[in-house]
Length: 243
Image 1 (spheres, rainbow, N blue to C red):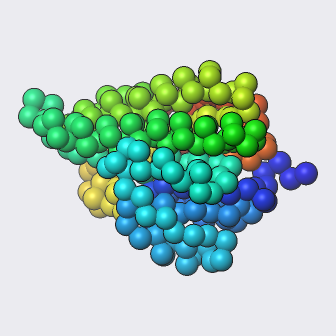
Image 2 (image 1 turned 60 degrees about the vertical axis):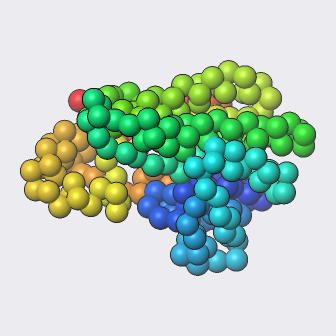
């Protein structure tokens, strides 16, 4: 058996329309999985990259219960909770709306998507893999992003809490904490010579990460190779947190 194969599995990847989510969806398909590409905007580009082994599903996690019916309609083996948003403002001026919007998408929806998946897995008495996308700000404070930091600390926490409850039931719950990844979201940082240099000087590996660095880790955490990995938050950051 190929311990890294996802043949015969179906994976739901949220936020699969672009960036890290798109890379994860493509990598899952390359490993053999059928992929349900979910996003609040169309994932047609991602589906096009994968081909017939993918389908699009419009889900807006501004409603934290958006995935409540997904698992009764499809037999899904793997969930990757990648969808997320960020709002920036000085903490002294941060609004309740910006706090609630970020917590709803980044944390509350992650918990209730995991819950719906676990209920469906229990009914079919099958194994399952959950991969949550955390952040370096699951460990650090950041600046001007209080709700994002709180949400990503929360993602790390519920990853461990759900592991404690569900590991004995055959569900692995792990998380990935991406470092500085070269995506559209970080283009402004990479185009700022001073910030780019400061970031690279802090990363022992001396380079920005690629979306596929995260995607390949997600495949590992979804495959049989990681069956005894549970409750982990894996830093994929080129050594950033080791400095």
